[in-house]
Image (cartoon, rainbow, N blue to C red):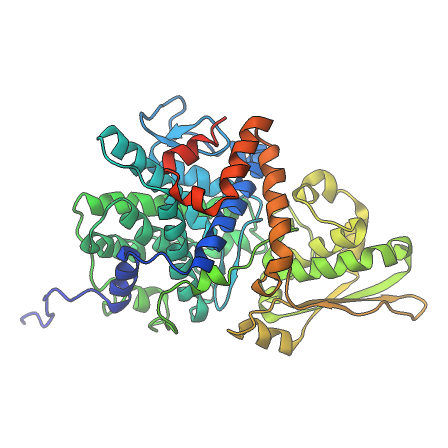
Length: 480
């Protein structure tokens, strides 16, 4: 019997075409997007610098083979490391995601678009130093900011209506895809090379969410994005060497992404790529906590002074939230490590009720030994408010609402404290940016001496000068 399979080479899937065309375009997004990208750059690097205080993070950094040195290698901010771009992307990505304190995007899929910065900075620094060695001009930080806008947009638009978590895949798949597209463009790839690289990103092996959920929650969730963005750099470099692409990586019957991993359904893409995501990104300003619980922490901090002297009188605590929070961070029973605790709505709420604040140190073992935390957790009931779920999904609102009310043994109650939009939301941007700048300054001062800190702050606070600065000069400012 003869073959009935048509072996004609298809055109690239339309989504791959669209992603590649957008990544290759000269567009850098709106002025609002570029300014927001600068804030995102500052906040993300600051979170990475703060993470260098934690040995469980720093043990993962450095070259794959200890002691190796890369000439003209990529600098890893806050360190003296000089690495190849693939390893550097992992190092930077690991740092910036470690404390779960950088920006967030919440939709059908959630994630952290600033995770792409690991690959973006590594690729931009590598190309700049290579260009200089060859007598060519380096890239500028405007190139980096524009790449950030594009990576945010690719990841965020794909997340709007497509839930990868519901088929068991981790959201870092979108980091890999977005980073691959923009990194290939940053490295000078042609449109065809970008398409080839993006096709590789879709057919690559993809991470499961097991490490984010009970009973397996662990620190891999803090380096998974670093792994994804570094893999993107590797795929980009392969495409630049002429490695062929796979045009129907998404749609191939039986073997493509849709049929194998997405329930035989194509993605829904509701809007063209522009700068919507960067303009609407959510910043984690005050609390290193999974974003679905940010407003719960704000509520608990308001309640702290009213109830701290009445802890023994509390009968029950009702946490009212939205469906996604229940699915991700509603957690009872023992919590085994910091990664487990920072994804527990009840834990972060208990800390805020007890201390009137929440810091990264509160997730460490020493803080978790306080018996009052579990006493409060055991009194908590988590319920869904359908209107919160609807507003969470509403494109024009994107709220992340939570409410808390305490019930006392004498029959009295606290006020029901509700917060609809967290401080990092676009609707509270004016309130948030001064606090973001304070956070960045504090994080920079935690790592560098005064003169170096001042130089970093002056440059990062000047949009025009920063955009004109060469990438390698910017990265050199962060060497210690």
